[in-house]
Image (cartoon, rainbow, N blue to C red; front, side, top):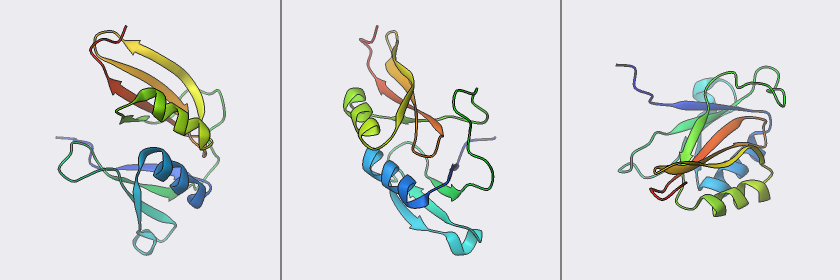
Length: 131
């Protein structure tokens, strides 16, 4: 089976990206640069007993994504408890709205944002009353 077990977010400014994801989502980081041979920080995204995966921030090797272009790759979506509070943190820490909050009727609230490095990601708050 091809179960997703790890993700990598390409970044231009490692400290800025660590600050963004640490402040907005509470992630912590471990320096794995010596193994990768390049700036590479493992991202611990939650408790081991919770569903989800860990990943990493890695130094970008090429050009950053261009604004207003279609997504070229995968978009990671983070589960959140309070959509509006998380959106506020995203914006306060330098993120931007890519696709505003919308309802997945009877399931959740969803939206997409651009991080400080130009990458698109989503947030998702389960809510059976969303409409």
